[in-house]
Image 1 (cartoon, rainbow, N blue to C red):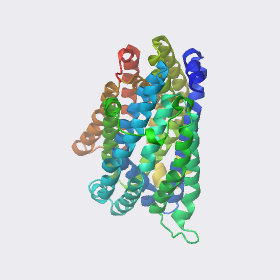
Image 2: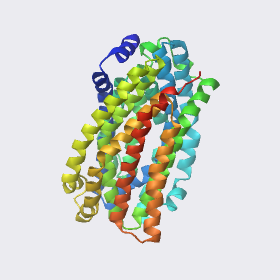
Image 3: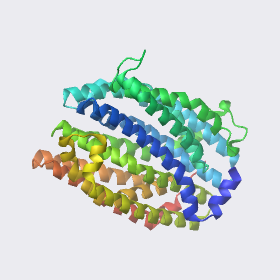
Image 4: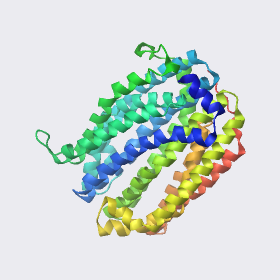
Length: 453
């Protein structure tokens, strides 16, 4: 598969290649969205605090998880460049070092934040009931996060090889198992006690841990990794240094983004638990939309790295332009449906008049600015594939910390602004950074980025 896939990317039709790489990731994200929807659906049958706990918890979990994920993503551009250049010996060395690195970061980004989760939540969530359930969900998820780190190392490795089907297949399986485990662990069944919010987190940990050995076994069967085994997963300072150099801006941006989202949740929680639930509705919607955006983002990352590794900058330019057009058309359609049917979207998750009323104006604004949200993912795909990640880090800081958090704090604490203003700030931050992100891609400075290994 290795040379055939490489040649297809270097000589194929841009639209066809992008779609062939993107659809498995879209399936992956569909399963992730289904998992998010299932948690929201089942916990929404218990109460507003239980429904909102995963959103509040993940806003804090992702501060640690997203930084770790961003670090690991530094392996994508390295592996795709080596693959594009046909250097398979260095490629296998890079994959082994990346997986080793994923295991070492479990202590600082999994165990330590889990042990301090109740303290972290106490300073973020004001509502006592919501804080209680959020701390439980956060602790269980972080303690069981090691399989997810290892999975992501192999995921970025295979993505760098243009293989999106294998990782997508196994994450779909994990999420289907997760959804099946949700009802018995949340509501109780036979010998399984009723665990409610804790049950949702336990189901997720079990599902992802169970599927990991099968995923690793198939990942190592990729022809580009021929002869590689578990023994090749070891420390390599040169590779890890380059992974950290490329991945640090992404990790910092991810962490800063999620700290910002946590602070934004904190501001919204000052209005009411229904306002937090409305924000959760928008989060679930974005998870669904990310089925498409993340698919194109990762497909674009893969082909940008491979084409640049092969010295085909003309193809790299062609690929991002095609991804931009496809993303724009798709987001216009999705945005229009969101703006036209906000109440119906809310009712799918929580049939509560208070939540529906709070979320209506938010969903309309999100719908109107949806194409710009898609453009952010195009810029991210180019940055990740080329290894030019610092500009994208600055874009993330602008989006969350300047245009969203700073303005939200000023609006609330200085001008005593209402919830509609918060929704306007959220939508505007996506619009502005989407335009700036595409302008950065269009300047093509990322084409000059070199990776030394």
